[in-house]
Length: 369
Image 1 (cartoon, helix red, strand yellow):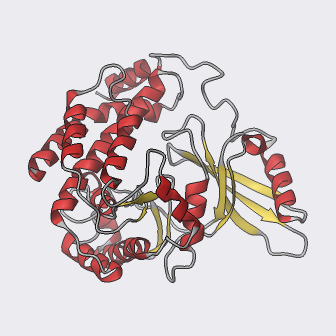
Image 2 (cartoon, one colour):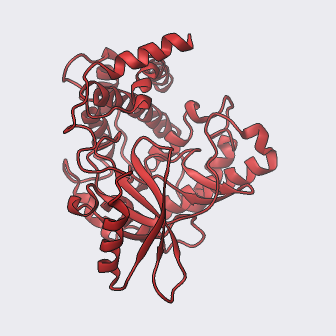
Image 3 (tube, helix red, strand yellow):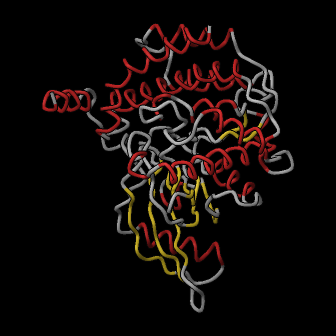
């Protein structure tokens, strides 16, 4: 079976061989000039000499490239920093560094919210070859959604679960209206309002999956129509993380040290984050949110922090939405490989998950009906 799967993955990656001008045309994380360019830009940006050393790429992730480095200036303590670059061949390209930087900057005022400090960002490709953001390096390890709950033990799982719920509540309770995030309300497809936010999110993933362009699973068209017909009105428009789940935070000794991976952050209905965090896919074979915390406890802590009530009918709607989103991500990965935009074998392998994802999508629509 493993050998057969490997052959299938290889065939998928060879459907449309990538040319030199379609895969990562401007950015190379291994290029020897990268630290020089980064050092030059930081020196200019900070108005003082900066030496960049110790670049090391982290292997995880299929979206932004993550690189750790040290920035040092004479007479000052060196800074451990993270460079996140929007890889032109990444899962959600083309990228902008602005949403992540602005969200982290705005949320930095929230007490006890574990997020990295945002230092700099730019979308100018002449600097490093792609959009990038520079943040604080936070220490910790990354729990996976599919394993590790038993090894961590109940005490650690409980404290992580409490932190997980409380941090999401803090994000959703934040008043973004007096920050630069208020400009996001304009939206790329029209104003984001309580009445339109669900449709905005649906159509975002319709575009990502290229629905209507070439062969498409009929379940996706059915789900799109269902989501359009049942779109709820949001009680409040909040910051939505967009990928809030186990696997996207760091922890030490059973406490969350940093919420990561903000590339999908946007304004919308907070139920979208509740539904994504609670997907069965991320439950590690349990009935708990992320395999960490009982659903009722998670909701209770979130409600206490936000002052909002969990609306079960809206959660069910967004469970369909985020499963549709999951399928759109898989289809987007397949398209990137087939069109030569990516050679990442992990994206090719994502195609094998589409059938089971669509089956789960059908189940969730039936449960929400």
